[in-house]
Length: 616
Image (tube, rainbow, N blue to C red):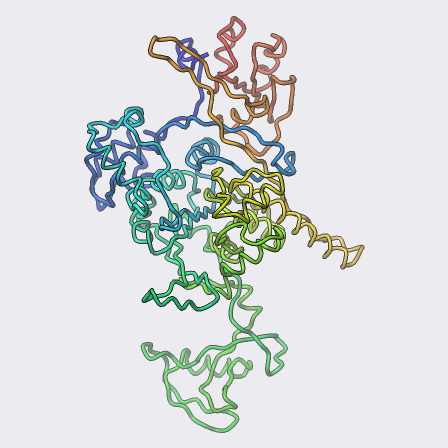
């Protein structure tokens, strides 16, 4: 049956709604791009309200060809649904992790029904829009699509301009139009105290900063991390400045909410030692003398060993200095000839944590070569993925996001799967239960340009697409973590109660497929297109769409191939095959949701229209 038929018959219908007109009373918080510098951007407000947009008019902010087209893409209802892939999944009955294969814009729209406002940390490593990446705008943007999106006043010349702008290599317009709706979806998915990190290089860094200011609000900009991705020094004579670093832009959903929950800390860096055998353990030191641009307390310090005097301005007053000296926290380096320095101990820094800076070295946060080596170790062959990100980098980002036990981490450009691997590793180390959601399109692996990766897939009976690498990495990494914990536990005391537990190393995999739909041809003939999704996949799509239950939970089968439940929520497909007693029992015991694509307006269903909701 069609959605409109159920609506006309008086049923309540639940579906993948468009993203329009939902939080109009919270425009500033949820749609910061509408209000900028106390002025209202009329075109952005139209988009939020779902009104026709003039593609030729753009208001204040970052303007690019196709901006309003991309904004309308964000609001458009997805025509995709999910099909459970049991063969690729791991620990399917117990895992709380998800891997979604397909266009990430569709995946994000499906996720939003349940996960809106629930993601603590998002990391993405999108295409960098270089000649080498060969980025070409992948989304549809023809005249028919414009009409569906409700865009007004687009002429042939407007389409020609977008066609030229979007299909040109290294097109800034095309790249921005691609990123815009995906970042808008990311904003909707973030918790109030959530943060997003985006890796990028020089080609689009400036544009990305302006785009993120628009989407998240420039007041929520948290910082710009410079990460040294190379461990060696380049010597390219064709470039004035060699590329050794990449950019990571960070934004919070709401800076004040993020601060309330506490800013996360990174692992301790720096060198600690114990040359004087201090019983408090390893220590490092910092100058007691203030810097040249600082002011402090002035008094004379006398070196207790050689009697040398220093008349300077110091970090603390004389009373504080004497207490530190008595506590063996003041040292005079260079065999007693240097200026005094204050000790700080490793255990103290570990307790208070170390704040992140905007420079992340390759020694502390990993580098591309190290990440490549780890991939080689896992896969047994080289070059299965180009320039993967190291776990150390993602680990640091997750830490400063303050994502802890049971928090959700999302990566919708999953690539080599580093984010999922890192989450499992962190959980193994600290006993946490962070959960990951990864999205990766089934991008074909070129058999010539990416021969090693292609050959690996063929030799291991995997489809030669990037998501195969993502999933295989998660499987191998999970088993490696499990083996390491088993070995560590075997080495320890057999009777020790607090043995390390293997974290959740599983994941449910879903494929993106065309959703069923009604089509009308030129003669007015109606046809119903269906996919070949199994019963359990139909149930999971209902769970995603309704948004009341965790999509990672395994529904209990009540009536074979028809009725499933989670708690007191009953999900029914193939309702024509259900007896009146089974139907009434479900209604009596909980809330009932019926798959609209497999239901018809029969007498039994009509009798219960006040008690059920139809799901499309």
